[in-house]
Every structure is written in structure tokens, then in C-alpha cells.
Image: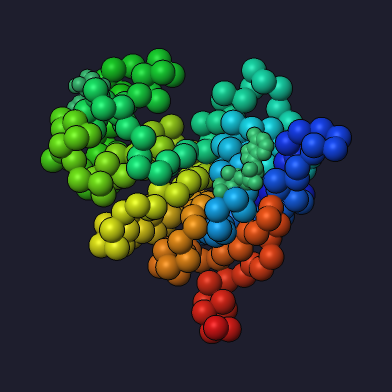
Length: 232
Ligand code: ADP
Ligand code: ADP
């Protein structure tokens, strides 16, 4: 599971200091999809970067499976990052590598043996329903298929947390539905804690178990999606 504890991010100093994230607290259990929804400028990208350890919080912490990752020394961060897989907006695939090649990249980077890479890539392709597209290049895939490759790549190092950073933004409603149903399937099959960051409330209602609304760097409301639905 992943927990944020009073997570705060301030850019700049003194009179120029801007508090972009202000004491955020939330916890996401394994097997749960937790959405963070908010308008442009709310702090979503900054939050994503703090969760995947590309940015360090100014104070507070990001705790994964009981360990505070935000205070680890630089040299241990690389290893810690493996526990969090990130899916980006528009998948961000390498255009010169095939679907299989993109999924293999994190494994190649770690120096995993070729035979093991092939086995794991095969498994991941199956899991996201793309075994028949293994050797296609990104331009030969649909938007939804590219996003499935992005999800498989995020899972390559067997993380316990999956971070989705605007992963369905820009997809049409049918494609969004199919990506959402894949995420829900993965949540169940792999017991993942999923943090789903988006500006689209409609998608939150489809995908999430719980949700927090972020505005001006603060959580202004949070709870179970079902409760939110019955309130409104
Ligand atoms: P969102 O992803 O929700 O649009 P961001 O995290 O990109 O929000 O930005 C939140 C606020 O933080 C914005 O007001 C933005 O201008 C500010 N901000 C983001 N990054 C920096 C930075 N490196 N330095 C100063 N301000 C920043
Ligand atoms: P690229 O042309 O993108 O570099 P490669 O053919 O070199 O792709 O494959 C990259 C990795 O993916 C290799 O480790 C390879 O074993 C694996 N791979 C390729 N095709 C498949 C497949 N159909 N099933 C499983 N793994 C595959």
C-alpha cells in the first residue's frame, strides 16, 4: 500500500515561495483504486512527481509498504522507484521500438537476462491483451493499444503501486472504458494499489473506489466514490 503523510511541496524561497501541495494525507490499500481529481493548476503533476520520486517533497512523506521513500538517500532512490510503476498521458512510448521492445526496456535497463525478459514480456503482453501486436510499432497501434503497452511497461518490474498520470486523458469514451476495465482487472489480479490522477470526473466515477478532490494544493473533499455519488 501507499500512504502520503502531510506531503508538502513548496517551490521557491522567502517572498517567492509558492506552496503547491499543502499537507496532503491519504492512503491507498492494495487492491484499491484511489483517484485524485482536480482542475488545471491544482497540483496534480507535482503530486505525481512526488509519488514516483522524481521530486522530493519539502516536508512530509511518501510511504510504500511501510517504508518512507521520500527521505531515502539518492543512491537508494533508483531501487525504490521500482516499487512504483507509472503510466503517462499518451503512453509516452519510444517510437523506434515495438510493443515488446517498449515493455522490455525497464528489464533491459536492469540487466535482466534475455531469456527471462522474453518470458516476462510475453506474460505482460498476454495480460494486457496484446500478444497479437508484440512486434508492431507505436504508430501501427491504436491509442488504446498504446496505452496498454504503457501499462504493461509500468508493470514490468512488478511494482506494488501503479501510478496513472492522466493516462486516459485525450482518449475517446470507448477507449477510456477499455483502459479503465483493464486497470480494474489488474487491481484485482495483481492486488495493486492504484493512484489514478486525472482532471476528468467522469472517468473517476468509472474507475475509482475512492477519490480525493484537489484544489490549490489541498484536498478539499475525499471519500468512497459510492458515497460521493449518493450525495449528489
Ligand atoms: P496540475 O498538474 O494540476 O495542472 P501542477 O502541479 O502542474 O498542477 O502545478 C500546480 C501549481 O504549481 C501551478 O500554479 C504551477 O504554476 C506551480 N508550479 C509547478 N511547478 C512549479 C515549479 N517548478 N516552480 C514553481 N511553481 C511551480
Ligand atoms: P525492438 O525491435 O523494439 O527492439 P525486439 O524484437 O528487439 O524489439 O524485442 C525486444 C524484447 O522483447 C526482446 O527481449 C524480445 O525477446 C522481446 N520480444 C519480442 N517479441 C516478443 C514476443 N512476441 N513475445 C515475448 N517477447 C518478445
